Amino acid sequence: MAATDRERIIEALRTLAPGHPVSRIWGRGEWATPDDAQEGNAWAADVEDVADLVLRALNRR
Image (cartoon, rainbow, N blue to C red; front, top):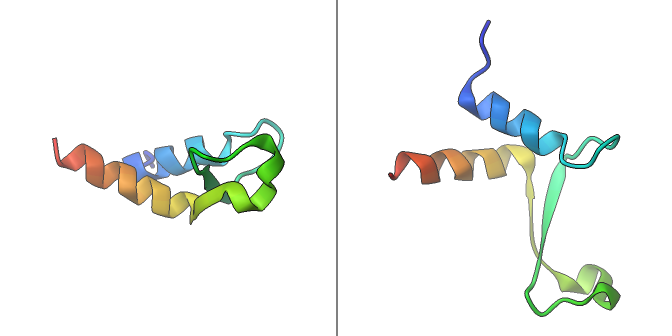
């Protein structure tokens, strides 16, 4: 069975970090420095949620 676009996006996101499966993606604030640790995080989302956002953005074109 062929993978859906969503499944391919999820797989790509899960393999962002070589050797470490990704389940959650954290976004750093533009103000964040390497010394900020978790205080520099502006948002977090599961890879499935990010995939849905990507698909919605692509469908708007």
